[in-house]
Length: 257
Ligand code: ADP
Ligand code: NA
Ligand code: NA
Image (cartoon, rainbow, N blue to C red; front, top):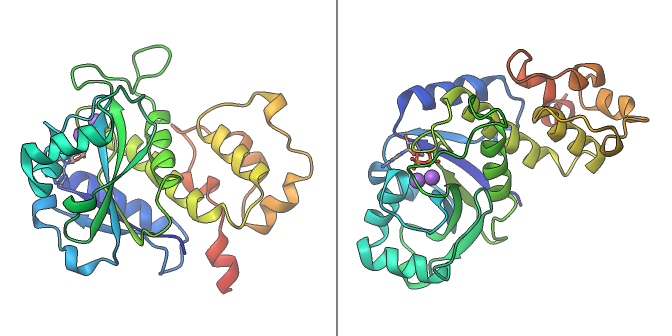
């Protein structure tokens, strides 16, 4: 069973955008993520399937002093909880965009048994979410953080709660973050139904890569067609110009029609 995703954020511009994108994405009702607008403090924990996990878009040292992490610290038990959390991460440097599930053990609360720690900054004064030219924020770190978190969810977990990634301290514009999060979530659901070759071509093209040796398109056209995609559109995908829906396999739609 794949877990249900709940997107939670107090930034109503972001939740509005999430809803707009969600409306365009073909997912069956049982896999459709829920969008919850508001603070972690006001979140209705009794309405989600448990055990649940919650993503910490943190920093490389595991401190919980700001942004969504501060809300996590306040919710789970203040500074003593932060000490437990950092000790569980062995108080050691964690590279950005690499997810680590932290079992909460005696600190579990509200159905949450894990925090999935994904540093989106090394430390909050330095932004990492920029492309090679160093000026424009890139969508790749957001995709990597979401993909890494999704692929590290412990098997018992039924719900994953996640705030906007890189939309606070990390400084990625909400539209870029929204697209990258949705793309990662859509592929996470679709990956059981498509070949790993198509999955990898979609990810590489979404991120703007097309190194030929990694990128075997032979015979992919037919598979694309089966899931409502067009290989030429995939190959030409550009985050600033193309439609995200051109990149998302129409799995649930084809099954229900
Ligand atoms: P990042 O370093 O990845 O940018 P932040 O923690 O700074 O992470 O922000 C991530 C998101 O968390 C932002 O979109 C922000 O609006 C949201 N956020 C921060 N505090 C809360 C809270 N108490 N409840 C809900 N959302 C929050
Ligand atoms: Na962060
Ligand atoms: Na944070």
